[in-house]
Length: 111
Image (cartoon, rainbow, N blue to C red; front, side):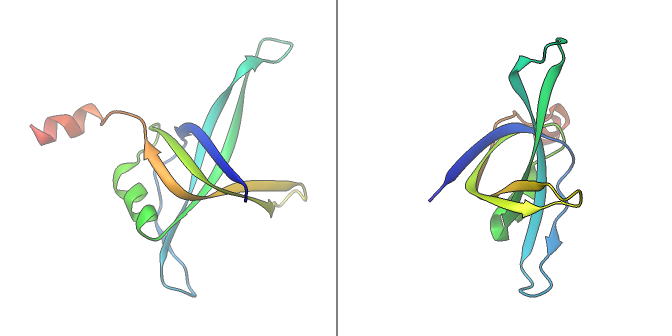
């Protein structure tokens, strides 16, 4: 078994979709994570990672995760085909933890 954990910032709001076969919800999250080092020209290197969540976890992410929030996703690593012919990968997450504090406007609404 291979387990991978990735930490990064969500690149867009979560779009909840329904699986046509099972009727269950799922979402594909994209997170961006900066590397600890720079290239030879001094540019910051950023990796973009796709994370698939299903069922109640997808509903949780759609309800609480917002563009820009930091999150950690853990799950199985899967190689997938991508349009340019190169292999890509995604994480089939069984755990997602939101690491950012709530947005200021959400705190004001709660008060």
